[in-house]
Length: 485
Image (cartoon, rainbow, N blue to C red; front, top):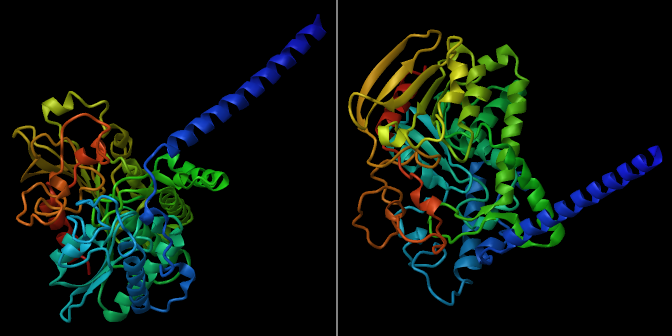
């Protein structure tokens, strides 16, 4: 009897094992089939550009980086714009000359690095955009400070050209470009403070530049750092990007190199997103977390003051990680500041919330005095749609409330990851009608009908693209810079 039970158990275990293998293989092939059942790749997904910067390029300074960038864009003109011959012309393709999305229609091609010199500059300002973006995302900040600062807007490697540029970059490539730009500003402005403002991955790169210097006991470059929607932590699923790319290479399936394959209608941001790009951000955040974990108390003191703007809901990066993995560990003596944008808690919106996005933050704020200044922009419940700023000062549990003249736009329930850097007046992402009818205006491109028809997803159309609280954000930046030594 015992032998029968043991034999039956073995057969059951073997059957379960092979069943698990079969199910796993079936799931794998289904996933591959679904990933391949997407639009065909275009020339801008498959063309390899040889003039792009990599850390191994051996460039000595930022001027050489700009010269290499000239060659890069000449290569784009030769390999993409002159080679692409569509069967049907599209008015919304950034890679067709004279379309509404042609970057050449703008007075300045914001896909490229730029330097605005200022002989009367009070400080230097390095601007770093995010993954799949371009310097355009920082253009309004540049214009705000152009009369006070010597400004460098950096185009990160792999960006501003074709989406395929993101398939073979590494985070050290991006970090190398940041180092060249920071050194250039320091050379141009000896003895004057240098500030850095970074959006998303750009913020992670600015933090990495600071932490790498501290880790090596080198002098830091920045007098202050401004982060917008910073990539401090990502969802755990980001770790799977590496294995999806490995699978694509093993099966020879080029579409597996892409998380999304979309029409390229945005003149200054890729709509298609390479798997490698997500892996680069993930590895960069892991590197920063490792560096932060290894700092001594004295080294933490060396981190330049940080001012961060973050929406409490963010579908691209982890809002909670900004607090949990960065701000909770910063020393109280350096004047670090965090501005959080709450969701619109208008009654009709509040009833639809699946959960309170502020709830996960509460444990970090309720038990001990904060080592940083926390400002929460929230609804003023006494005035419909108006907002106020509730301050929780560092080292104290006392609160102060400041009413603002700003309001939530009608039917907008939250900010988004991509919205923070754009004011309502932005002609590309803003909602106001523009007189420039020859250019695309993405902020007004919301259409109603059945789903699954347009190549532009409903999620992209409905995502908030501009910041109704931009004036308050800029006033906080001004105060942060003015109060630095």
